[in-house]
Amino acid sequence: MNTGIAEMNLLASILFLLLFFYGKTAVPKQNNHKFLYSVLCFTIIALTADTALLFIKATASQGARLSHYTLLFIHAVATVASGYYWLIFTHNETLPEMQCQPTVRMAYTLPLLVWILIAFCSPYNHWIYVVDVQNAFSPGSFFYLQDIFIYGYIFASGLLAFTRYYTETILEQQKLCLHLFIYSMIPLFGKCVEVVFPRLQIAVPAVVISIVMLYLSNMKNELFLDPLTKLYNRRQFQLHLAQNTKLSSQGNIFLIFFDINNFKTINDKFGHVEGDKALIMVAQVLKAVFSDSKAFLSRYGGDEFAVILSKEEQEVLSYLKQIDLSLIDISKALPYHLSLSAGYSIYGQDDATTLEGLVQAADRKMYCDKQEKKNSLC
Image (cartoon, rainbow, N blue to C red; front, top):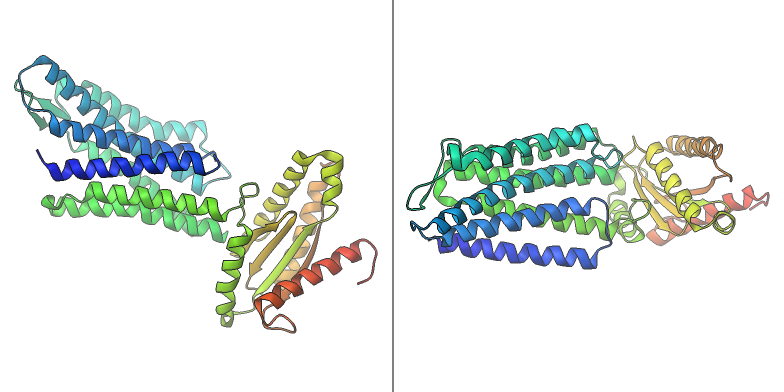
């Protein structure tokens, strides 16, 4: 028995169990979490079945034979199922505006169903695995299909993320797509190395490392994203602003503050649920308007939003006009008028030569705009 593989499987299973239970209890439940947790669960099942197979001794008893076939089936299905949920998770992360449609979901599910049928029939046709009269295991003629299915799903995940990386214009989504692509490449690289150097056996460790990185990246997003609007939160705003002002030589860095006009009235008159909807609509408008600019969008706090971008002033004014027009359009279907006050400052100019000065200047101009919209001169 290969005790090294058994020990590695056990450690990986314990690690995944800790991640699973920590994530379930410490992080607010999001729609896409169930798919990530499914990746963890099926990987744990696959590792456990693989470890149990190492302990089964070759005996002629019927019970041992049945156990062997059962574990082989569980291992075969669980490995491919983990790849399937990896793809579903990637799809929903890279295409948040269009969750898996029934036809797309069926296209993703079909290979898994085919594989389950092949694995189920294998005790009779011996395509995937063969258990002889002494209950000794040997791979069947089509054993390689297991790798094609599991790594096919992972490759599809990487391809989807790579494609979205080059077509995505929103900065935070572009970064996410890049990370998802890299995490998919790690298992594929590990498998390629193992094919060339079979004795290294690094494919499974590569998968484990990649899943851990996938999980940590997802948890990081939960720390830095506002759960309601899905924009970056104030903590990430401060980090991004500090990083970008260090690179101010790349061009003008604009900081724009937005504040929803009469937001308290919306909450008081129509309820906090409607207030939340207003925040979400504003976030969607900001995403749409700044979609071609690679701007950094964040919810600064309450009903305030902040945008960091590097453009010419005329372009910034054009964006502000587009936002006003979009909100006028949206307000036609609302029982209230949804509008924003805005103010911007440029790093390095006038009283915006420091981070604090930049924030104060933009905030002051936003307040002036709000006062003007109340027919008060600033």
